[in-house]
Image (cartoon, rainbow, N blue to C red; front, top):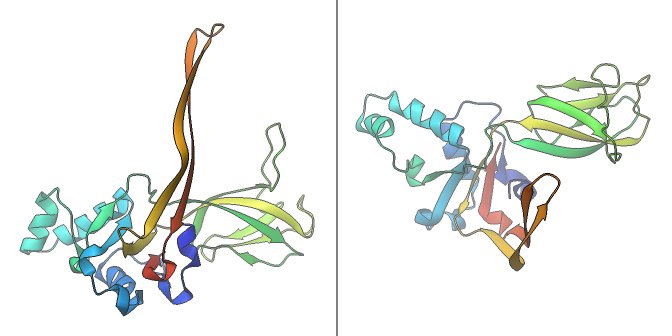
Length: 224
């Protein structure tokens, strides 16, 4: 869903410019949502990682107000501008991003997010045996703040070659109707079990076919 949200209209992908979480970030998300989708505010939700939600709680709890006391002592849902902030356990604070990039000459290519960290660059097609990652500075150069990568002419990456770049981006904060993110199960779940007599181990395999989609992408804002 986070990846699909990148296809939202440009005006609805809000770059918080590495700002700390605060009222201005939530307000910018609301303003970026078309007004026709704001009419039923009770149906809207902010979704975020548990750590990002905790940062917001800590900031609000520092206020000498009843709202600060609530943020400090309550285990309930907090509502920036009246919209519930939902913690999603599977949302990483710095989500891992996988992106295939074609490197031409020594021209820097902008990745989808910035700033970035913990970058690993591999061939786009992995071999059956473990593959050694390309080496920063020797094979490519990075600008972690700008989120760009460039090929080194004398390195091991050929001109015009596509590489797989894995990195961690900054926190992400979608805003949408709670029912806008849909999931489809293409076939029923099946459970198979077997036994490995050599390792004295029972094995279980759960199989299904699942797809996800955003029903109305213009009804979603993504803050990065």
